[in-house]
Length: 282
Length: 290
Image 1 (tube, chains in turn orange, green):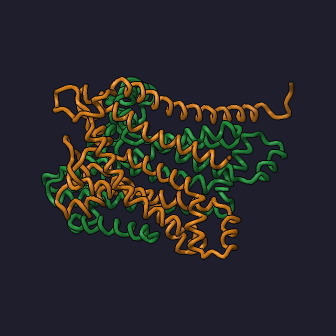
Image 2 (tube, each protein chain N blue to C red):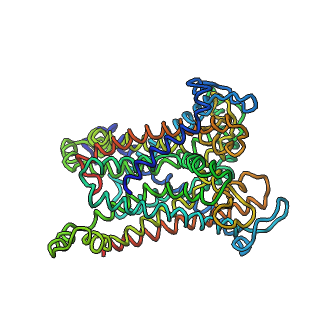
Image 3 (cartoon, chains in turn brown, cyan):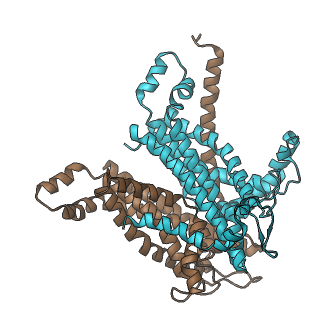
């Protein structure tokens, strides 16, 4: 078979296009390697004690991360108390009232910039506004750091899902003579509700794995943390401190913590993907 | 409520500045090019951290940009829709993995691999280059760059893919009808058209790499020295904050660390600002989303 194209051009075409395929295979390969490796070592290390017991002192084997699991849940609760209302209302504002305005643009831009601020800087910020005045580390400070990190994504995803609501639905409601605020709160928001909740879930999953902003806000704790004003352990920080020690048994628990975190994050991603897929197609 | 986003950004800047004024007043601009980091003598210069951050991010981008663009081209030009969407989702999962887990894999898998195979191989073949000389420790700037590269690839892929897919059909059909191969179409007609958006995705990835903390802290070796070789341990701005913040015993020490945070904040805001403007400017005349 003869081709009208010179060999050199065909060769370059073939080589470069295959290279793009190779890139894709490598990237996907890395993902599966990470998932597989964490699962393999994590399952080996995971046991009932991990969820129910407190950490043991250095040198003793066994023990678990019960306090860190509760700590992470408490931090996430605090974070959503801050991030969800602000993010949700901000998103509604952007989608319904700030579409083509200069303020709308500025807020969108600021949200994207806020999203790009390194998480460690958020930690410093929470440290300066809460830890310094109070004089000690606390769950509260950690929750605030995570909560602020949630805002930009909550704003943007809420806005996006509200924009997907067809204009005809809005117009139909307005045509019935409903005032605008009623249209927004009883027609538009319920229509987009599932998407908005999914977006916020993803946002929570993302901050649940954050370590850097907790290092010097929630700090850590080898025991149960009472109330909201004591330092608390959290899964990611515990994972980090265990991973950089030389103890075999702590490494084992770090893998277990890694698996739990990974399941949390990936679970949220896959579930939200399924929910949204159904919404868009059916 | 929506305005709070603006307010928070401003307050963060103000708080960082307010809590580092001691250090700013004492060292002035020389903070940025001082090379001594000596907490005991209270002598603080951030150059080793700036250097470590810039080098690891640059090397990470050198790996991640061609790789990410390759994936984006494959997904937008070659793969059929049924393959492209799930694969794009998988690539985005890579961005969802918490950075401390990258650090965990980095310590226990990548560091030994780099020490036993990659570094001996590089110094054996390219050892005449000063950046590939020295003892293979495993922990060091090379390993940190590799981890960073994997972490920022998804940002390049997802933005670039959407931008490539938004390039008008006419652009493709015109050059194909002139007898171009598929690759020539990508190279001559599509990439230049999408240039500013792709640059945007690269800047976005750069901002991520500059501010990445945990994974880097866990594999870079944490030594405040400026060494040419990528095999040597280094330190980054984010890593020094993560490591030393709770150990900072004097006010000046703490404020110097916060000033590093301020520098990091300023740099990432700037890079992000450029990235977003590049992406917005493109999405204005080709609707990226729809």
